[in-house]
Length: 497
Image (cartoon, rainbow, N blue to C red; front, side):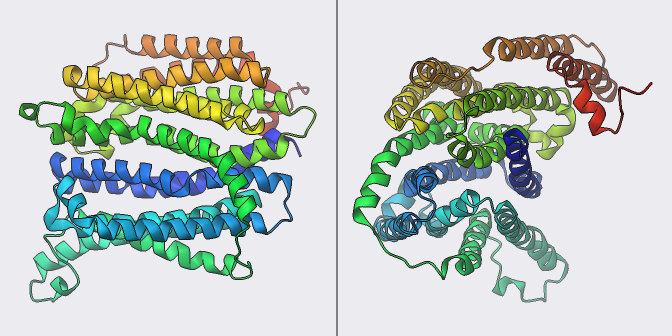
């Protein structure tokens, strides 16, 4: 089977589970922005930023390590069991640590009266860390449908609990005050139900994965564990720095913006508009899920480097189409958040491009993973984090959340350039850089041209931008000589006239 078709197929399956699942979750964003003021949503944004980073710490690169060692010895059951037991042990230690430091943590986050928020998030993190390797095993075994089914279930439970506690229970309490709904629902708990839904759905995922685990003999090979950790530890640095580059701005924005400018309010505005890049984020995530096991499996093939080059080119093309699509139809996309958050729409193009370059960086990262030079990935990631910290400190006090958007874009552009240069030295891949840059230039020209459409009616303005999007697509089809493939796709035989 054509490796690109295989990758596209698996990306589609992971994408369907990720995109549809996340879109179901995205139905909650309008709910949150309508129910909660920016300050409350700012707290959610801040806490979830810490969660994203801690999850990376708790999995410490074990997924990538598993892919690497399993690709070398697929029949060795000790590879999975060793990593799995290790994750269980560290998750339990994490829970013990949170229990011991619960009071100071609640004071630090200024939620002393809602310490249960931290407990729920800590439990969620532990469950997610424990299930990380079983999910990686499904990916490594190409069981994409099983993976997608579990993810759908997780999202369904999360969505259902949010709707139940945030919509149905208040409605029952208002319209049927005699009904004892307050026995299971507390109107004062507020955003806490967001965290409760995450916790329950993560726990149920662990339960549903038990049938995949009961035949596995749990044991630890200490020498093997040290080899995996030696390989994965730089990946941990890369992952932590990557999460810091994406989330640090939301974590420290409250401390960088003067109190007179309502920093938590600005954090909420930034967090809500950041999520309008969801389509690009989902595309990147679906690609990452399928690409990592893919490039390890392709490494021994004769034409593997050309395949990697083609993957990056088509990845950039699709990313640019998503960028133009979101920006051209932003007037539709923005209805996902309440109008009181619309003042931050200007950051969306920067966030979209930052996510695109993050995806390019991930695609380029295969060079240090395949050559076992993962320390170079750590060096690049550290440089990115330094850029993120410095630029946020300089720009956020001056430009508010716009400064954070500038910082994240600059960070990932620099990391991408460094990774490309280093990769071509240590593991040269014939990336078609000229054509990729050409497509970026065309997309830039099309985007800039769209801003000169002086049409007041938003629907007519969006209609006027559509030909520009089609123009970019036509340029790609012509340049890649895809007319024949397109004809086959729609059932047209171009040889017959």
